Length: 180
Ligand code: ATP
Ligand code: MG
Image (tube, rainbow, N blue to C red; front, top):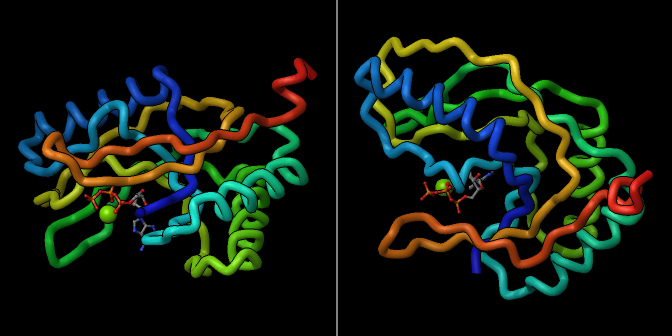
């Protein structure tokens, strides 16, 4: 199965990004837009593996040790990656120190558990559209943020309805779940 570790966006942040998608549509940008419920931040892409239980165990370890405060996700800037199949349009997030250090601890733990994770510099972003013909599209990014109190191990599959993500496990920030 195809796995990644990510953070689901809350309804408020997702709605703000949906409004950005609407601006892009209004500018005539044709693309495969990310569905509202699929908007997320990827922390680590695991890829094809049969070892979901091992990934979950690695996440349990790193969350217990390092997920000490809620992670701030703040919308920051607009951008795209050019690709052969069209552009990927995304909104970059602020580089919250807790987010950056948690992500790096997570990658370390997954590597130690034997998963082949890319070591590229983490550029936190939420993908809004793929295979886009983005031309000179430019949109304002609203000033919005959320505090993530959960990190999920997510299975990614292609179904008739399109890309589908299913949470296999999720880990809450311990201080938050204890009300502290
Ligand atoms: P689709 O591939 O159909 O366009 P998707 O990219 O959302 O949909 P996946 O390819 O399963 O679905 O990717 C799941 C998440 O992992 C996405 O956030 C994606 O951007 C990210 N991702 C996918 N491949 C990689 C990779 N090689 N390196 C880093 N992140 C990746
Ligand atoms: Mg993909």
